Length: 227
Ligand code: CDP
Image (cartoon, rainbow, N blue to C red; front, side):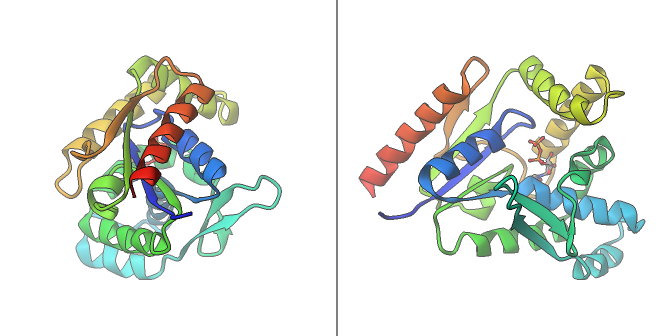
């Protein structure tokens, strides 16, 4: 069967990666978490004290960054490796979350990540989630989904995820981080977060996991039938 590219963009913590993983599993497609790439770059910059507002320093640093998604045989999930180190756990920390949107405004960082993302989509059969996937990375993708959910639902979901790892985290810290990132992501100059004109809106505030997958799979079937 013909393979397509599916893009999922939207606000932070609205469940993009859950839908993307569900779709990839159901269709036998590859799932790529583009946010993990920006998070890994941020981790590298923080560890190496890179001043990302300095263009030359940033370009030099990017040359030393190797990003790979490698499947974990135990979980069957693909995990982010930064220079051969598995950083999947570390990149979800609040320390990274607090800086990632600033790093993601830098044009050279985006050029670096987008080139790799476009390469991953050459064979199609891919579901990629992020902020600019339907607008910049794959503007010709066959199916584009733009996701949202109300802020309280998003905060509760992310708080639960982060609290399991860090019991000291507060709901307020999580809320502030989501709101700040959403603001920066939607107001930056290069590839701001916005719904592509041909993207379909999915608000999953009141949907169960099964219901959201059902809806998305119907959209996929419709696209496949029309191609
Ligand atoms: O999981 P969540 O939606 O909270 O965030 P993420 O997908 O892990 O992305 C982390 C951050 O990376 C976002 O807040 C953006 O600043 C940036 N990002 C981006 O600029 N472009 C993308 N395609 C993906 C992420």
